Length: 422
Image 1 (spheres, rainbow, N blue to C red):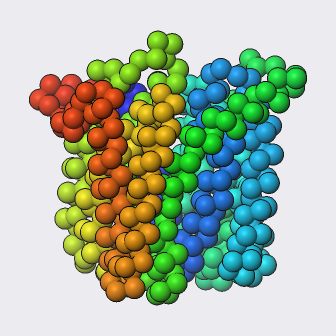
Image 2: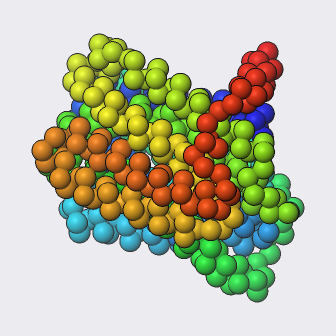
């Protein structure tokens, strides 16, 4: 488990570095206002993709070992197309952006949805190398093409360039993913079971994905409040601070994803085996270490990297740090309950977090601006994590101490890390 975690972690580290490169490029070349516009578009796209998970999402990982992948792919694609079109229509009514924005939102969100469906099916069949390769390739294309375009011509320093590059960076890996899907042994004839599999996919997805929708609201609802009460420049500064803080989540997400895959593939329904417990404890330790490094970065470093407008992002990072650590523990526990199909536990925790987020955004952002947004997020993460820790203790008999590293864990983790780096 720890060896696989390290392999997955280094892959996700690569994607995080490249994603950081995208944040840096858009902030450095487009300024705070341009970065804010990109952040709002990315948030809109992510919101649409969340609702595609109501007939897909992580449930594709859960059902892929048990069902024909083509019977899962077809309804997931159809639902994704419907959601993207309906979502774009909703954005048009609620915000009335330019037609060009809506067209890009529809095209890019649909490509992202199809790409996500294919890669989740591969991951469900434990094609982890293919999944990691495609994930890195997508971000590599986005960062590399953006750098090339922004460096080549001053006329290309606009959000329109970001749109054009996004089509290529999602479209090419999506087409390539069929290379692995077509090599699976599943027959590609659609039988009468297609309807039954679609119903099963919908039944599992509703319970499994509701917490993801609520969680997204916890993560990004503050963006819309800042855009309303402040402006695109403030949103750009907030997005940089959030991006730096949330980059640390690649550590717990690596562990949580592997834990979830192992649970849904376990024939004996194993509940949090010792290897998974050790990996979880090391994950918390690594998260704390990464947060300490990030919190120690001076304002001069941030302004030197992103530009003089982004100095206030350091205050956002410091206020987010406790919440980022709490959310890391939340991800580990959520994957445990999701792997056992106990979705209600995660849903209640996410709902509690959303209530705290709404209260925090309403009361804090008008008064404190982007710092109020950071505080609202931290309070939300602490509340939902506290509830999950309590339910985890009820289910396993383990208290919060189960996530505190021990001497034996450190020794084993260090030895495996040395082997990996050789």
